[in-house]
Length: 435
Image (cartoon, rainbow, N blue to C red; front, side, top):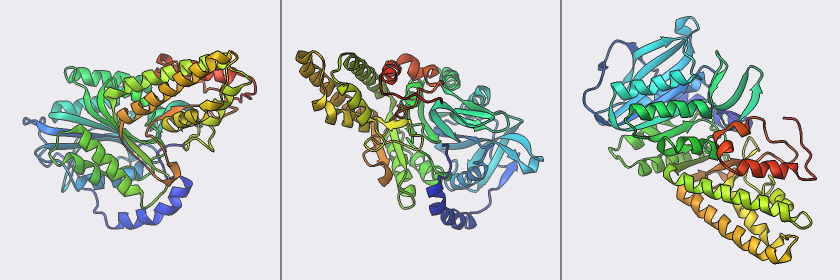
């Protein structure tokens, strides 16, 4: 369930990939040549660091994305950098981490580490600190590149319990929410308390409440997908073009990235999403989710003939609610819309309270929909996800227990959503399964 080509996508995109790669120039990597000073003295407008955890099945896709990035490359107002951790044939299959400076005529190795753990907080933090110290700029964007699994800690492979992002096959590690918080906190401290301008997740299923909750504390904007990102990832030529315009308007740049993602995938596949978050607005949305969760718990405690329970069941049913490749992630806007459509059918034991409950719930859900539009200012999706609002939330499928890893997530610990799920799952007619 990670950033990869799904079974459907693979058959549709394979010929496209082959024809594209045949016409790409080979990437020129040099060490100790080219204009790579120990530290750039003139401050650029933007630094974009692509953190490529490529010691896994995405190794070849890293090469493609770097080839795309060369077409833009560094310039006076833009530093284009990458940290690529991978197993290199040139190193006799030794694990190597390369600090790369990307120009429009090739790539220069500015330094390298042996045996780096790309799922370790130190490796990620040090890569960003290198970019900050050696290539200063007014604005900083960090691209987190690799497999992603959103909030959960699902054991997809026996040796690597995948949660979060940046899966390292050598060390069987990954960056979970606690590691990301640690790293981002240190990065913001190194910037004198200034938040990152933008975090872009080139990884699957990271446009969720769990990720936004973390990143909103350390960055102003975020771009991510609610569903699987195909193995090709972003088109780095068009992505970096948004930074190369000379603009310092993060909102405009994020919108351009989302639009370029749609332009790249819409002709190829129906199953894609991409959205841009104004993270300063996320706390308002998180508070709304907390309020909705409290109301649903109150409704479940006072329902008549199971009508609240049935409203919830119908509203997150995969046949009615937009859901994704990991079906426990549902689209929040779609869920809210379905709850609104079901409100007329709910009854409380105290009939006098029924109308008041319906009214308050309707007002809160409509406030929530507005909060989603406030936080998600650019949102695209393919035909497979019609109506997606740009942010997902965890809701285990009917008959499944809450995953053991979810209560440990930062969002799970700080939002009443978890308590709502626990109460709903404890109600009669649930058939829990071992996860």
